[in-house]
Length: 377
Image 1 (cartoon, helix red, strand yellow):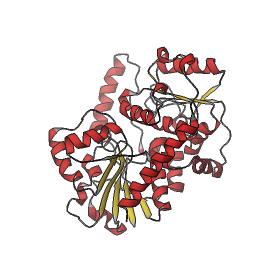
Image 2 (tube, rainbow, N blue to C red):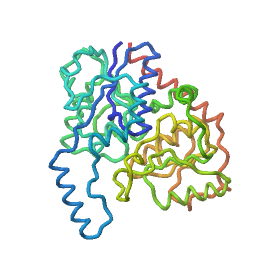
Image 3 (cartoon, rainbow, N blue to C red):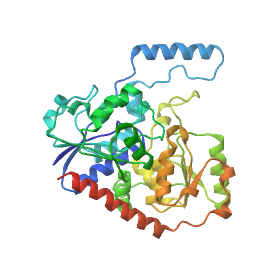
Image 4 (cartoon, rainbow, N blue to C red):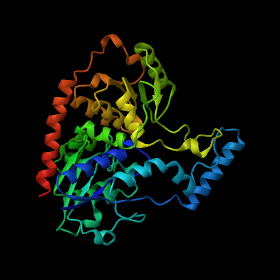
């Protein structure tokens, strides 16, 4: 079967890239021909750019520490993404780049027999400007192809859709052959607002054995990490720095990170080279070499589990807290979720029973694979 995957654009998010790689790999191993539909959102309009520059210039005049231009140029974006895009080129098969609203005629040349939505927060309005695309609106009159949602995520347990969106998207989702979601709370959301039954399945990254990820690192001959406390922090803060420091002191560990030295939006003086995202394989190597992980990332938490590394998952409400609580509850690891140093009493943290965790993972993996196998016949 020829399958088209629709997920968030393949940019600089390590977890987002790897969930797509994992789903494509699993489907290929099941005997299918798979392409990811390579959606790229349009560049920010000239009007919005001009308005932003004007606003930031005024703030600068008022002595705010702020960068006048917060948006990188196309050339700067290519430099920032050079490593992550190399990963896509090597490991993810895609369609041509689509910069406009996805339509069926744009994809006719690929002859897809099935479309799969997922995973990642494809059903969160603020992350998906073309929201209806992720409910396959362009296939609403096509009854010949299969339509599946695999571990799609709303990201939160609150309903963020307008009434108008809800009514329209309910009609679209009821055209799906099967729906599965990534968080347990999403089952109730689908039932309450869409009147659709959904299955709770694993994020695609959990479907692959860690040896497959290790092989990616080996192919690129990534050197050993410079420390043994891997920190993957998406939204830095003093509270998170305090958690890292407390953990490093307790276990006598040396912390390291795999992130750009600087963010483009940072107002401090910088070189564009400092904004380049390190290779995806270097990020994976971080988990391989770590003795402990501290992260505020959902996929950072997942890869800690995959590589059986003790960890603290710092609650990240802005990016969707329910993703963490659902994942950790599945593996009986709720105590690993922390909000501040006040939540860390090392005397209360038992060693993780990885044999038990891996047994749960095996069972959930079979359930997820059965879903794909049974609906892609």
